[in-house]
Image (cartoon, rainbow, N blue to C red; front, side, top):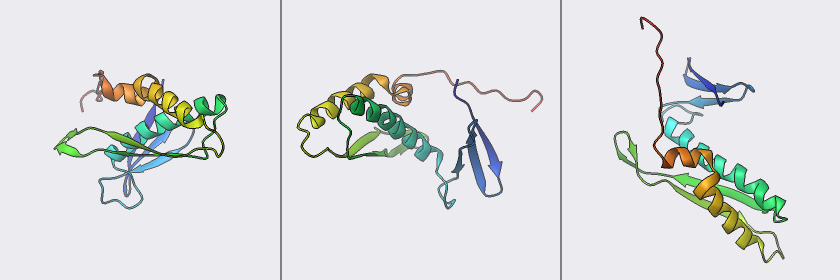
Amino acid sequence: MATVNVERTEDGFQATNDRGARVAIGDGDTAGAFTPVELLLAALGGCELVTVEPLTAQRGHRMVRLAATVSADKVATSRLGTITISYDVELPAGDDKAGDVLAAVAGRVHDSYCTVGNALKEPMKVEQVLPDGG
């Protein structure tokens, strides 16, 4: 089970995981903080890259640079349009197969193996639990 705690702080909100990592969350005007939508985009990009990297490396093709830009336009008050993941990669010099391996692995990860991507592609149940009497 994945769990994070989100709580109000003096200057916005903060998410904390059970390993002690912290991420500042704000409304877009809060310096040094991500908006919730930015965190969603970061989660998707992070999910793909942390899955692609070891799979390409295991096949003997470690990319010199592996990065991605994830973007989406807000198309309505509480709706995003298509989310685009643009890879920024530097292939290893002299490795003629690295590009093909990357394309195959990244395609499979995007289509099937990224948990965050799968959650965004298919409707899933989200429940809210409020305290009694509140």
